[in-house]
Length: 595
Ligand code: M6R
Image (cartoon, rainbow, N blue to C red; front, side, top):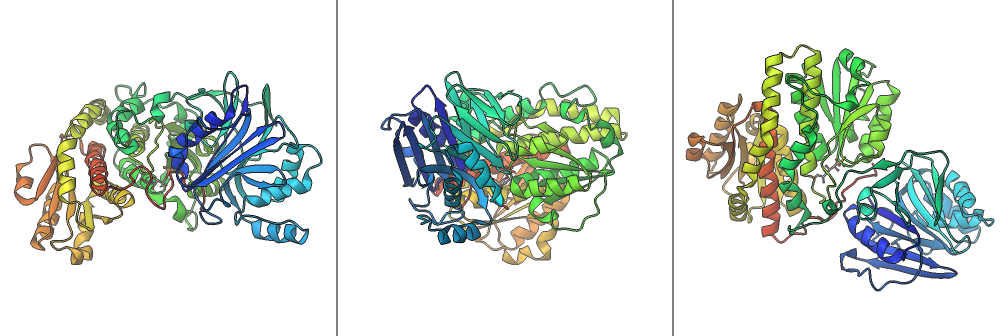
């Protein structure tokens, strides 16, 4: 939820920290702070608000610094609760939650400690102070032994100069290696402008960074991130969300590149688990939010193309259910960040039951990629806007390829596989056609921007797309929107339809087209307005719907890729018309690392 960063090296630290925090602001944006050490001098700044306005110029001298962008969990949004938290000249930035902080605070208060914030993080600084005998890493190690919860922390102190101590448990930490020093950060977006060489810390590891080197308990592989540095800039776009939607066709290209054969796919991350996958008789697809909706599309893909039973679940639910797990099953975790706590908790459960675990992940080196036994990267590049768009497209593309792989293991006809692969090669061009209609979609979004309630309906592959369209609209424009199957409409939701509640109907020419037409008629009969997403050339739909957004014709299993794009644009332009804070919607954070 929060972003932590630190720098030690030969350059002035202040601008590096401020720029890094700006890149990570999407992780948390209610307050921020920075601490710079310069010999015995300490500069500490904590502020409520957005860091975007902060200049990296008017800082202070110093080559060691830590910083933080906060999404409040324990303790309200205030200057005193912003990080770095400090006690007795020990400065700490923290991402995660200390579950036993109240007990620790009580114990320390009895010993005479005075607390100045309402945060859980402050206890870390107090514990370090208690344990400090001249060596910061020893004190930090001892302090962490007392803590129950999750953390990614960076600690500095003028009492043990020349180092940053970093530790991690269930909260991401990477280390960027530059020519002049080291940057520690919650994610690669903060380091990408300085280096592509990173080391990822594992749980319970502690790193000590000094100007001329770093030590971690064991030797670690240096990985290269293949993100371009301009990928974390808005470029010509007003918002990251629009930039990321416009990248969707490119994301499909990048996800399939080098992975398609004539009648099969070649996915490096499935090579090792290949034989176990052959024996798998059930696939669980697990995700949260948009990751769950991609999983839901995956469920249909696994059944129809993968020829295997599949169930999509929300990470936050399946972990509490008594599902019968066994080693002949596979769990595929679908996540942009690879750090979603609900998924990771579920991953633990799956591993305990010896279910084969795979990840469909975007962020390289994330916990999900390291904890799963195999998997496939979506290769979307960094996604900055809180509303997930291009990652969704990447996830569906990868799930389709996994379905093809499983299908070919299970007797999916060669001809069918070839047909899908041929169309998959064309689909990004068709996506470009959809996005070229952006101005038209904008007009439609503006026309409906005064409505306060929406239904999104779809069936089969496009039922999850209806839910995705509704989620996108509600999270960035704050209007109420619900995604339901066309079939369920008459079982209840229809009661809400009237002239004030428009319906967006995803209705391409597919096996459920006629049924969708009937649903549209049901809405029209209740005076509801209908915006249809339909296949180019469909004249019939034009006669019934109030507005139509056309998508090119494609195979049924590929329609979700094309139908999601106009819904992403619709949500974007709708929120734009309302003047909302599109990239950083209220109450939300990009990466949800608490359960
Ligand atoms: O990083 P993840 O893909 O695991 O994130 C899952 C959800 O938190 C995320 O998709 C969320 O629902 C987005 N804000 C949706 O736009």
